[in-house]
Image (tube, rainbow, N blue to C red; front, side, top):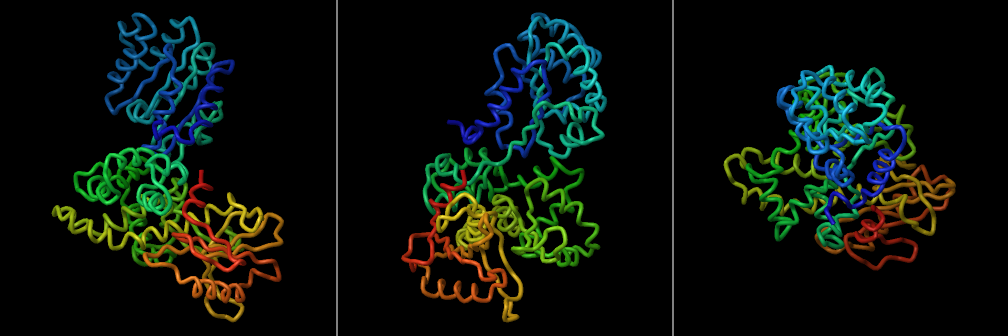
Amino acid sequence: MSMDFFDRQDEIRRLRAALSAAPPVLVVIYGRRRCGKSSIMRRVVGPRDVYFLASQNDSALQRAALASEIGRVVRGFDEAVYPSWDALLRSLAERTARRVSLFIDEFPYLVQTSSELPSVLQGFLEGTGAARVNLVLCGSSQRMMHGLVLDRTAPLYGRAREILKVRPLAAGWIREALELAGDKAVEAYAVWGGVPRYWELARDYRSLEAAVEALVLDRNGVLHEEPLRLLLDDMRTAGQAHSLLSLIASGCHRLSEIAGRMEKPAGMLTRTLANLIDLGYVRRECSFGENPRTTRRTLYKLNDPFMQFHFRFVQAHQSMLELGLTKAVGIAVKEALSSHVAGVWESMARESVPFVRIGDIQWGAASRWWGPGTDGQMLELDVVAESMDRTALLVGEAKWTASRVDVGRVVAGLKDRVKRLPAVRGRRVVLALWAKEKVQLPVDVRLLTPDDVLGALK
């Protein structure tokens, strides 16, 4: 199976259902590049439908290219010259005797040279196209797709029958995609994240280290400049966003600290941070139990494993990599990889909580907890979650170390911190340890391994 189609059955089902509805409809598909949007459309396109991949050519050339594609299903359509998008679309509606689906991939490219196109499509959907043409608009620029289709002021706002956001795949699918298990699968996910195209590229190499060196570290590697390309998809200028990501990756997690390093007022950064959160590249962490709207106990972390890896290792060694010292940087990556994986493993542990029954209890979303304990001393916990009935509290720790876990020390430390945790408030407490490998734990502490977590995250 193509990696684009792990866990894509719902998107395909919804797209097919929409295109078979009456009357014809508008469908919008958007999301980060390399996540399989085009592959989903190609899976659904029928022999009498039209799939068109837009480019950044002039509008007249784009219309000629689209007319050529339509000519495959409407005889002689490409023999005419269409002076406008309105003329082309009206001709399509008039010359097709049956319903046809028109798939336009990378729709924002067309709008860059024809700003009137969304309004033209609005008129088309309300007029001649309403009887015979399904329209599927797809784009990797999430900012532009929002502005063109999803914003309240956009001409096409409210006209879509389906709006499908294609997200990166859940971590668990990487086991099947790369034929890995346990800690090796977690390590691969910590580098590539959930982007299926990255998995396909990595599959061609004998090891994770070889794939990282060739694809990411090498200055000519396919993914060497990937973060910049992603940011330019969604922002007019990427400088401030790139700086924010770099600082967060380097350990600046509070807004005041980030603003201080950039020598800018915090208010000048909030909009860019909000955009990065919407795009899925940054997450805002609040301590367990805090109200996200009012709390000041907030940290900003990189949310995407590939972005974390890239900014930690590529950006930090950019000068060396430009000199071609790929092997030397590769050694540095190998030495520090366990520390990077540990951070991703901690996030995966929290993410898995609602999908596993620990202590035979259904848990809600998990968070970190930090702040003063009941004794006034600072306290931190990796995983804290509340049961759905709010009668129990899950408290846990995530460990990813090169050496075997010192079970006695870890369990004793965890129990000591639970005694000082204000959120306990007399509730039943369930303890858990997320560990890289199986270890023998006391009966009152639950163990979750990489395969447990990966099995839950699918």
